[in-house]
Length: 67
Image (tube, rainbow, N blue to C red; front, side, top):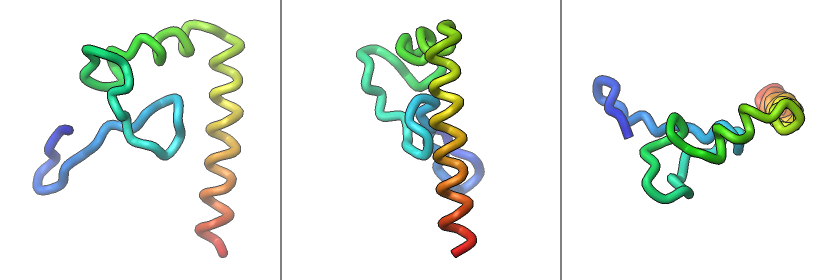
């Protein structure tokens, strides 16, 4: 986790919207060197599925915030 002033900033998992990076792969330091993230980002179909999940997650968050 990086420190930003007085706050501790936890990296977010790009594959699980809204969740922190849990370092689920061995020998990784965060999303930037995660091989699973790399594979998803390099595959057009998986990348589109991820984009769809992010849109759904963002819609739910906005709906919860407005209620």
